[in-house]
Image (cartoon, rainbow, N blue to C red; front, top):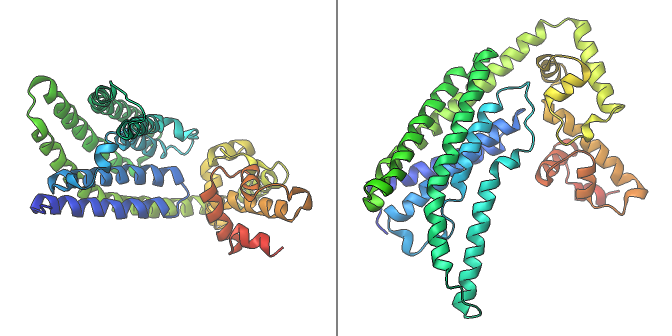
Length: 362
């Protein structure tokens, strides 16, 4: 292992991105997509940092994971930055997030199939004469394709930013503009790096410029991203408090009564894709009004409020003898949850115990 100054800087940057990405992913937020899309973006950069460390420190002879699954997670960079930008538009409901990451899963599946075929060939059970040619072809096409995907999503993100400016959402305007500018520079460097192969191939040396730029970017977003995320969150809370103070008692009571009816009588919490924008439209109020009433009037964020209703519904199903044939996961999905980890966390938060413990005590 060769741990020179460059490798040490890369290692520290990758670790910083890893810690910040994990923190951001699990930190509580009313806008879950906003936190998690930025977290995924940073975690991909962290993975890239460890991948760079793998060859710069000559660990490649021992760690083969980066050679087995190259150009997989990189397809998630563009979708993540686009979803992060789009998440600031509270009036827009983001659905089917997974569709934006289809290329990540497709690339992973392709590499997995190639790995299985290689293992079968090594064992001598079957021979695949074109296996190495297919693997080489996929590696050659994956890199320019990943650049193209990132650039397209960067353009989409610019479009979302312009819509935010038109909607006068200046809260995070400076931070988002800076982030898009840096991403534009990164896209340009990436295109130049890949183009070297077709015009003047200098081998692996062509990656040094963009890798150094990525290390600098990882340090920058690790500090600035955390700072801006905190500033945006605090500023949002202050604006929500100010907005709530300007609402009349009649408006607050009407909003509370309407949202109570939507949950209790109409059971809107059963909709997995329910968002604050769709709920506000259903009860006929402004999303900002609904957000202010939930945060300041009920002291709960939107997700916390809706998940409380869902947890209560699951508890009723657990206590119902007619539902004993169902699994706890089945009950959770029937009550509006769309992921097992989210259900587990929400249930523990509301009841103070796991679903399994709650069921065993009944």
